[in-house]
Image 1 (tube, rainbow, N blue to C red):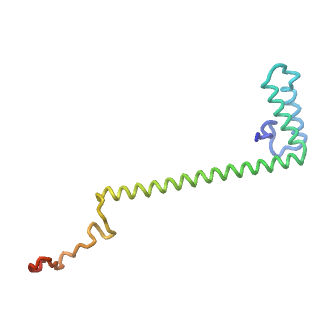
Image 2 (cartoon, rainbow, N blue to C red):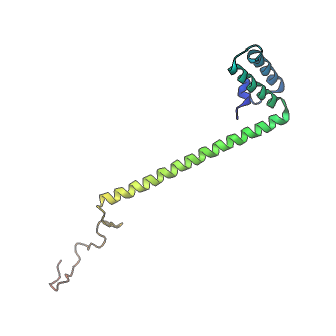
Length: 137
């Protein structure tokens, strides 16, 4: 949907007189009778005429502005969704990379929170061998 305010070169809070003056000045430049055999000028004049016919009537202007508001909200929603998808993808990649780094640094061994060997005995503890020989310190 083209922005009819930009087409006429007026602010969105322009009154009827400003819209009418803008249309009149643009119509003098782009009117097809003054620019014969120029398709681009004719298309521009049709766009200017459509903008003026929409903005001069209070009802159609209100409906148009409601459409602009909806269009802006939709654009913001799409941007928010894209940002959340980017954030989610970034976090997922960070988690995967972290897990891969832990796996690579431990050579695939199981590592507990306590350290490399969660079942290690304190240095002054006595370990008993399973082969029946005397305990060692």
